[in-house]
Amino acid sequence: MKTRAIQYVVLIGVAAVFLGPLYWLLSTAFKQPTQIYQWPPAWWPHLTWENFSLAWKAAPFDRFFLNSTIITVIGTALKVVNAVLTAYAFAYLRFPFKKILFFAVLGAMMVPGHVTLLPNYLTVASLGWINTYAGLIIPGIGSAFATFLMRQHFLTLPTEVTDAAAVDGAGHLRTLWRVVLPMSRPMLITVVVITAVEEWNNFVWPLIVTNTASMRTLPVGLLILKDEEGLAAWGTIMAGTLLVLAPMLLIFLIAQRYIVGGITAGALKG
Amino acid sequence: MTVVDLPARTHPDERTIADGNDQRKRRRRREYGLFALLVAPNLLVIAVFAYWPIIYNAFLSLTDWNMIAARPTFVGLANYGRTLTDPAFHKTLWITVVFTGLIVVGSLVIGLALAFLFNLPLKGRGAVRTIAFAPHILSGAAVATIWAFIFDPGYGLMRALIEPFGAEPPDWMNNSDWALPGLVIVYLWKNVGFAALIYLAGLQGLPKELDEAAAIDGASTWTRFRSIKLPLLAPITFFLLITTVIGTFQAFDVIAVMTGGGPGDATTTLSWSIYNEGFQAFNAGRAATLSIIMFVILLLVTTVQARVMERRVHYR
Image 1 (tube, rainbow over the protein chains, first blue to last red):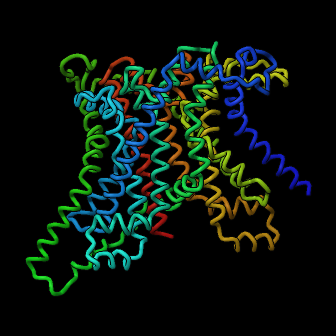
Image 2: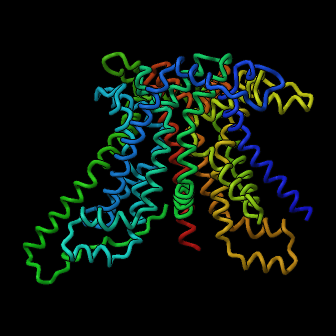
Image 3: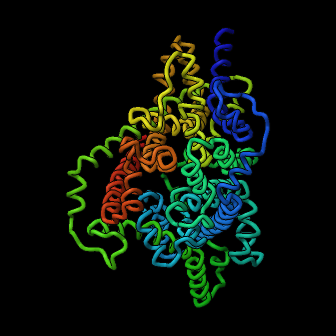
């Protein structure tokens, strides 16, 4: 009985470690400035929206939000379409040297993203894409890991169903759209959610490929806000931080099992 | 990564016996065409933005270029010579190794401990598991910003935690002794839930019989942990080790937001110095050299992984 009690204490302690910083963020974002700069700290805020309007005045957060949304939606759509089409081709179609081509796709996972920053910046510059949506989105729509996950999943589907579709005269694209994809819904949702989270959180690429406030995304805008406002405006900065985090927290709470399922599947099958 | 190698499923009309030879050839050509069409966009992007950068980096690393001059000047291996003998580079490498080492050990140990906790029959463990994992999917820049405030020696949460013990809170991010440990704490807070999740999945997949038999034979909890569970979890530990090394080597957003590689060069890791050389000092040759060095190091890590995985498959 005593061990069980200790175990519960530890469990609550762990919860506090992970919730504490998030509560600190949330409460600060809604505190009045005088409450933020007092010691000992106020644990309960006198609710105010002031910090959000200050953040909005300090930086064009509506624009950051729009840019992040555009990049996440279009980037995710293109990347997932790429993954699905490539995975379908590798699972169902014949082609000479298909195996080598598949390893060429998988091999992209061995190239660390950070190593590609400078050359990709120069490539994007020579395409005239600096500070454009194309420059922000296109370099990231190649898909290796999602393609791998989708292909492995397609190979587990029963052949009878796709065969039946073909006998009924359905072409490949129709089979993909009408038969294969509906049977792959959970995997598809997993791939979409994980990709969207990555796109939204992406930091270093938008940082180097944009150079005006109107093209910044939320995470990059946040860095600039923090550097400009400094230590004197934690309320404003926490309000901005909350704007960056809130959508992903929401998606996480809704699609948690898909994210967790996808991540463990990727790890344990690998 | 093991690729399950199943043969491609053929479209049934490929198998129709009545097919004329000509018709079959035409069908096959159409299938090839469709394959190329479906795969081309992805392969093109991968070629241009994943493979070409390696070649481009290798070329740039042999040059001196400020990215403004019309073209790079060829300097041979000078960049490598200078970088590899540069004490500042040695320090960068050392900081990277320390940073990575602390995070790897921290994630594995804490992750495993959390996994055991979440595996106990406790009420609310699912919710706490979710809470511990949540930071993993949050923006690194945003998480770093929260922690920058927590570490604020004047009004941060850390001061409230440290002061009751009679100690003075350090100025974490502006103190060269505390900045790196501070970053490690943030990085662990963000990512340890991932290790816990993977370990938990591993624990739940372990065969129960072995553990139960050992318990009946009177083996203590500790012995069962050390001699049964830990060895059985070795493949998962190895997977986490490799992915954590690869991820931590490229850690950037937390460093960019919290320290910018400083104070001085106290948190200048390899990933930060690539950014610094390329996009702040505009020294393409140096940045490319550092990129190639990082690429080679991580390639060695993945090669070791592939070798070990192969052995596991063959000799099991």
